[in-house]
Length: 332
Image (cartoon, rainbow, N blue to C red):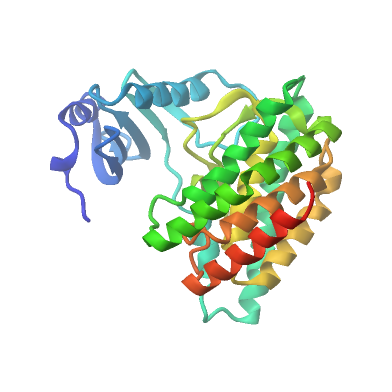
């Protein structure tokens, strides 16, 4: 559905006028949340920027998320992969505009049936480049970390929330049938306790995984942008970020959603796992354990057609049966 200026809440339009910018395009509009992401240009400079706005009538939870993102841009001074901050106010946040597509869109191009062997090596090269940037960034966050989550139950619940997202949620632009949704929910309910036990056991025996620091806390492939001209990797949407979160949370979510997207091309998926394992020397913790967690979590993502967008219903049912049997028969 195409959007026009008349769809934008009046108080957000007033903010655009006050800021002396010209509206070029509505990038995202959520009427329920009372939020808008706009592409604007300065009336005097003609430079493009992204303007995120929130209505004064937005739910309190959305206002807190908006304030949290502004706080990140205004106060965090550590390593960043985010767009450059320009300015902010009570109801707006203006950021650098990056001409880009999402990482999910970028990878999906290579999953089309017309993909050739030349494309395979091209995507492997790209996968290695973006993985290196993200892994190296989180390696620096882990190296700077001076704290740990002391409560294993808390850390287990934190990671288990990813497992729930992979089963029950999905990218904003995707949808699935009622039957497909029921399959994912059933698989989640069947396997949740077993996975929880395995998580607790892993964390108790690998305390270095409990390091805390800046976490995005929603690092799926639609929150990672790839610049069209340079392939620069940019992370967006810091509404749920935490200054002292479990750092491996982001890595597990990023890797598991990437593996799930690559599922139709097992050659690419296996190659991605291999190149991740090659990066273990970059890490101040046992990175192979992080990859193992992501591989486990992506099994449930395969049964969710919103993440596994190339999957047929038959493939979803097959993955459901295979994973349910495996997780319920292997002791954690």
